[in-house]
Image (cartoon, rainbow, N blue to C red):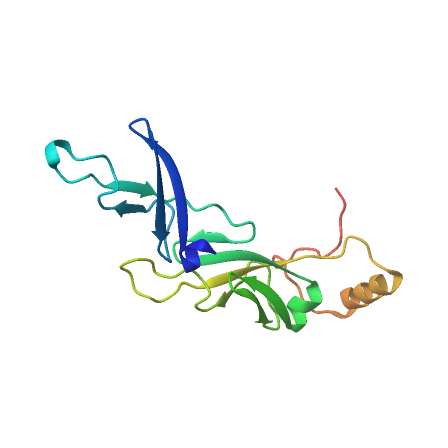
Length: 178
């Protein structure tokens, strides 16, 4: 969230044997690996020269729910088989709070659903457009079934014409055990 909005950090460090403290404004949109230059906040200048610059090397702490790729954010969205097949409106997290995401009918595992403009800002000196957020779909099934759920799944297996695995021409469709 600090990378999204920017923040002010209070830093304490030892410089030439002396404790120093600085208040540093971190701009919105900073990235891991980026360097921030603090003019005149480094070592004392020699022979009356200007003080040197201090460089901060930015490293973002990983977020527990989101992965960062440049300006884009990714998270895993676990759906039930019926939400994926029938479509659904699901509540998903963003850096600003929860939003409603429409899951289209027939959504498969591995599909990416985009939430436009919900990623990180472009950062200092970059375009102000924000990146996107992507929900990576994973379909989960119940580990245990009630009697009614088992009956419904068995009925679906008998009546459905859906075949996710292609059968090679001339291959037997008999079930074999190894």
